[in-house]
Structures are given as C-alpha cells and as structure tokens.
Image (cartoon, rainbow, N blue to C red):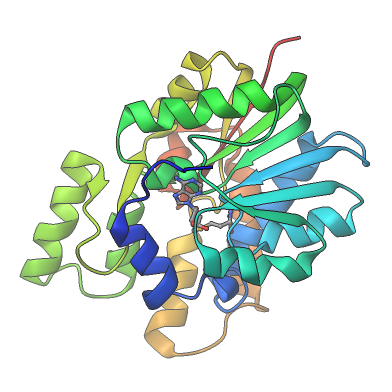
Length: 271
Ligand SMILES: C[S@@+](CC[C@H](N)C(=O)[O-])C[C@H]1O[C@@H](n2cnc3c(N)ncnc32)[C@H](O)[C@@H]1O
C-alpha cells in the first residue's frame, strides 16, 4: 500500500535527531505528560478488553501500559525506527499514516491520535486524519487527540532562560503569530492549536461530547525551568507533585488551557 507523503523533516527529526523512545521518562515534564495522559485516558477508556488503534503511537510509550491494562493494541506510525522500537510492547505494529489507515470501517473501540494532529500543518491533512479515525471507530467509540498548545514554545523558551536573545525572540514570535513551526531548526514541522481550535476541529469531523483538557497543566514550565537550569532530576520531588496537583486543579478552568504544554481532546463517534 502507498502512504501519503510524510514531510521529510519529520522523517529526519525522528530518525536522526531525537530519540522519541525516552522522551516521556527522562525528564520531569516528560513524566508529567505521561502520568496525566494516562490518567485522563483511563477516565474515558472502555473496560478492557477492547480494541485500541494507536495512530502515531511512536515507540509505544502508551501502547505498553494499554497492553498491560488488558487492551488489544494496534500501533501505526510512519517512522520505521519507531515501529521497530514498539515491537516489544505487546502491541501489533504497522508502518502507516494517519491520513490513510489500512484498518476496516468500524473496527476499533478506541482511536488515539497522540502526535499526528500536531505534525500535520495543513488543516486539510488534519481533517483527513480525523475522518480516517471516524471511519475506523465503531459507533459510540472513543477518540483521543493530542495537540501542542499554541503558547507552549513561549513558556518553554522562557523556562530555558534564553527567550530574551534576539534570534530566539524572533523565532518564537513567528510561531506564536503563525501557529506553525517550519521544522528548519530544533523541533520539527508542527502546528500549535489553541484549546478552542482543537475542540472545533474534532467537532467539525463529526465527533460529539467533545472536551479539551490541559495535559501538563499550568505549572509544567516551572518544572522544566528547575530541571534545565540546575541540571538536577526533578522527577520524584515535591515540585513534581505540586505541578501534577496544579494540572488536576486547573481542569475546571478553561482559561488555564492556554498555559499547558499539550492539550488532549476527547470525543465520541455518535451511535
Ligand atoms: C511526539 S511523538 C508522540 C508519540 C506517542 N503517541 C506519544 O504520545 O508519546 C509524535 C508521533 O507522531 C508520528 N506522526 C507524525 N506524522 C504522522 C502522520 N502523518 N501519521 C501518523 N503518525 C505521524 C511521529 O512519527 C511520532 O511517532
């Protein structure tokens, strides 16, 4: 089967620049993303066993605990290195693209899109990925979609202590205004959603009961700042617990979505 063309900078980034396999375990803010994504998903997942399609599942950080929880997981990702890394998770794996899934209609209870929507810069591509998720979900099935927050790079680069430097200020200013990172330096090609935009895209694709959560909440950048500026390990500290508590306490207040690093939208294919 031929897949839609993946932007070469995304292939290069995940194959040569970053090792996605340890992103959610080696830093405190990565761990916060993992703990919160897992607790938010567990709130909505059907009782196992159920079939989960993990689209853009990368090396399988979420596939692993989903399999341990008793779900039947099939992971799809366009990066061969990720698919190889995911083989040990207990999920079945496949090289593929969110815009053109091989799964048959109405064949999964849950579809996760924790990555593809922020790497598809064009709205038509994101709509296509959401339409594919809708097609392969059973009626009543659960969709979970991650976005990177529109303002995440502002908080991140302030926390790293270099936002005041001219090239950085210009580059982050451009991302804030255009909501797009071109993928030429540092991170790869990406689209940055506001909470409202993410909810609107999911709703426009036909999903109902749509909600948006801040994954890491409003205090993740303090954790990142402490870790990056001291070289210390903050994964098991009162500051980590405090940031985690802030993320939970922020949930009822949609204004605080703007301060989270990632957003998680939940929706359902209507019955
Ligand atoms: C930051 S990683 C997230 C991995 C994992 N889902 C997680 O949440 O930890 C983003 C993932 O999206 C995948 N991705 C990028 N573009 C995609 C596309 N068009 N279709 C499917 N996956 C894609 C990348 O290969 C990568 O594995």
